[in-house]
Structures are given as C-alpha cells and as structure tokens.
Length: 168
Image 1: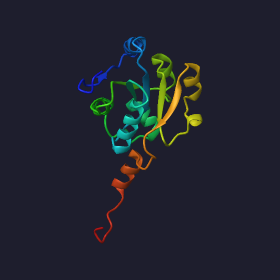
Image 2: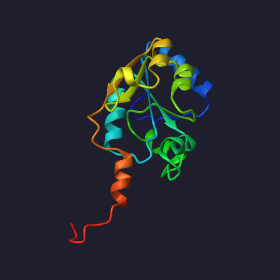
Image 3: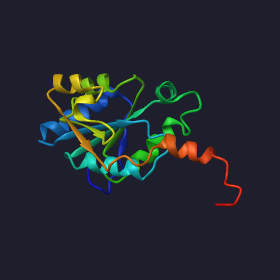
Image 4: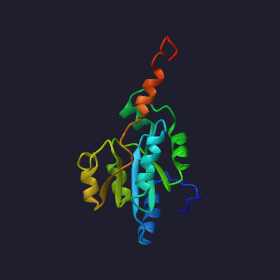
C-alpha cells in the first residue's frame, strides 16, 4: 500500500489472511505487531515505525476491549477498540489493522502467517510469549522501537497522582 492510502481495518481474519497471501505471493515481507494501544503515545509510534522497517506490509493486531480488561484490569481500556483501531490505522506506516480477543497473539499468527513478528524493546526474542508459534510458522521475532521509557499504564498512573501543593 502507498503511504497515502489509508490503512484498512479488516476484522474478518480469513479475509485478512487472503489479502496477506496476495502480498506474500507478490514477494512482499509481512510483519505483524500487536498490542493494547490503550493510550496511544510516542513510544507506540516508534514501535510501529520500527516494525514497518522490518518488511513491506505492516499488520497491527489490536487487543479487543475484553482482552485489554483481562490484561490490564477492569478500568481499561480507556478507549473503545473501534477508536483505538482508527487511531492505529491513521499512523502512516500501518497497512492493515485487525482485532484479536485471545490472551496471546498465537492464533492470529497462525492464521495470518507473517514473516516477522515485531515486539517492543521491553521483550527479548526468546521471552516473547508467542516465540514457539513464530518458530512453528517459520517466521522470526524482531525487537523494534526505542528503549521503553513510556507506557500507557504509567501515563494513567501519573494522571491520577495528586498535584504538588506548591504547584509544581
């Protein structure tokens, strides 16, 4: 896809698998990145651009609202999955956005069969929860983005801290 073509939000996993098969048949390298993206911040954008640099087609698999609640707690997500998907789709390097509800990305990796599974720098390649599946499908793990200095959870926690009485 060209940088001027908006990313496509494709919720039907089989339809997305068919689209990606065409990309692979054309010799393009497919990369899958995944996450909650509950409160989009610069660290997320750097992660996505790093993932895009690992191939030709970037698919972002977004945790569903229920999956975010299971992973982050009952007060999350802050934004509904449709809004999170729209924000991720607006990032220039993203080609496709989809949603998954499982605890890990194993099932979506098996269904979409990317060449590369991109994870952020808070992981090591051998510690990625889906590493066995990545190997099973003949893909590789790429650790991308800047050293993790931001997190949505930290931003939310900071927003709830009481202001310093001196007005700092």
